[in-house]
Amino acid sequence: MYLGQNLILILSPPRSGSTMLQRILGSHTEVLTHPEPHILTPLAFQGYFYQIEKASYNHKVAAQAFREFVDYLPNKDEDYLNACRAYCEVLYSRALENSGKHYFLDKTPNYADTILPFISRLLPEAKFIVLTRHPFAILSSAANTFYNGDYDRAYYTRDLLGTFIQPIARFLKDSSVKHIHIKYEDLVSNPELHVRRLLAYLNLDYQEGCIHFGEYPHITKTYGDPKIGRHMRPVTLSLDNWVKDFTHRPDRRKLCKMIINKVQPEDLAIYGYPTETLWKPLEDAMQRGDVTGERPSLLIRMNALKWRLIRSLQSLARISPIALLIKRLRQCCDALMK
Image (cartoon, rainbow, N blue to C red; front, top):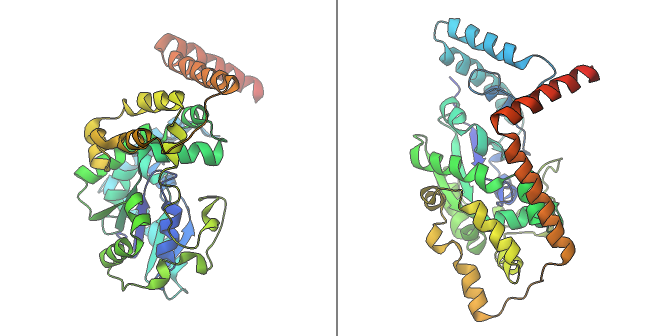
């Protein structure tokens, strides 16, 4: 039975260095990888374990019918999992077929915020690598990479900290599958030490070329870090970027305090960044007075107010009577658009 014996899974939030780690390991002669294939997501959302929210067919009826069918099978959900394993074996093994390599590495960040319990049960013998990064560095990287430094828009578009930290922490605490946890800051500060540690976990010999991943060809597709090509090896240049972003920007600090206060302190500690030390890099920098930053302009403050208003309206829309009214209006609009 296929249980993921030839598979490496990198589990991390977006903007945590997962593309860099993928290229580090993908530079090894025994590892094949492909950018964010999303192979496992559709399996989880067939309707038995998780259900999609919208589709071009009646997904609610389909999910109910599928659950009834799976429950009719002799071994119920275990038969469904075995079918999913056969699917995984064909795709992952076919990718490896003519490569001469031992492992396929799947780096798909969305696995980590939605379907970790499903994956752990589906492929318990896969090699799980959990990569974490300072929460504020994640938000800073997302805001500066995709939203031109607009923290509010980055947060209100997708709450990366709220959606990823808890499931990753629960995995680290409760999962019975073997895994290794590595922090982005440690990896870029001492790459040789931590690459050796990772390769030992994978039962692979150390190869110097993994550190110099930029010297090797890599597949570049739609997904992944758009800035990954700037460096040939791990660098520490972005470690303090979030600190620089926060200095003289009380609006950003206030936003991050609001976001992080919604995360359980226990989850933060397990994730690797306890509440007690979370703000220390910023506090140290401000005490030294060696960090400069920009003050928010009126335009920036107005933009932040706009996104907070949108978020407030979103919260209002979750109130039951209002949510029901919006749902009815959407159904009417869907009918008119057919």
